[in-house]
Image (cartoon, rainbow, N blue to C red; front, top):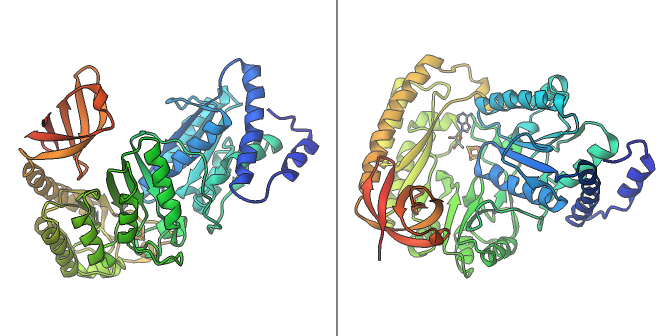
Length: 482
Ligand code: 5AD
Ligand code: SF4
């Protein structure tokens, strides 16, 4: 792309770069675009990109920014990993997320032997771990660029550096510096989108690596969030999901004093936004103000994802969750009383160090009492650097797996009962996917469950009332209500 011997060219490009963001990145987007055009002329075709996203909604959101930057440079999307530029936006919340990534980079490396001009970029949570980066440096030398979670906005600049120097570029920060707004972004769906309201986490649950790789809590300004929602509504978005590791802490650290409940209200006042979801509140500080806002605000989905993690007060203490079994159950009851048609869903970890059969029985007890609509269940995964990894009473793998299977059965039964209760109801769904062959639309209920029903393709992206005629386990078959 660039004459690598021409150091003066690279120096000149750098010296002319603005020093403020996002102007600096728009400048590098332009530089990369001209390099890309040259390359396209040589090849006689478009340059392609592929982004593979691992992990949670935050990563999905970051990937939209990465795609937006590449789009602005001129890359065209391909679903295949045989692309000119492949980005893996990685996750490290559990060990198996890392294992999967290593396996797949190996494959990319083999392909790169055949096509050396390809670029392989790794970013995201796993890259914030020194050990992972060391391993990649040593054993996966074909990787071109590594960066972390705090500087995804710098993609264009890093791509330039890779071409200018011809060398492996690594730029991982251990701390966030600034929140860079107004970057280009690609919205995957058109009618629904995520909005980051805060980054990082201060909770330090003892098993969790997130605070180490995503840094301390930083809330975006409410006006920026509302502006983003307005912009999205203007381009046809109807449903937004407000994203943060602990949304209850929103506004506690940006000096604005706007609570999360107030922010919900502000976003709901944006014309065109018809549905609002949020992820994830922490049970220790979910306020009555928030419960009230969900109850009275018709745009806010009656769905609360409330991670339990364990039903045992002793284990919760060791996890540093800062609530007891009784407090959790009382909170669920408060929510269910004030919002009678609410769906509560959860996350549960099985096999945390020191978990006894009695502790596990408490978890099962909470599942039965709280009547979760669904639960994501995870086997405890030891993450180096977290306090739980140092605990000397790690649970035997077989014991944990056996408990995990038992929990799955209970969760399956409870959630099936909850789902079945909705049969016959009429609910509003967002039409998300249309199957040309069957003529069935797939819509999502407020509580995230899916319903398939016959209708025309033109309803894609609209909110329509649907009768949930038949419960099929964890989804419904329905008919459009008049
Ligand atoms: N092991 C297993 N599950 C974990 N989670 C977070 N860290 C770990 C870990 N070390 C789960 C929690 C969290 C969800 C996103 O991932 O349940 O709510
Ligand atoms: Fe991890 Fe706990 Fe923060 Fe959630 S609240 S990201 S589980 S430390």
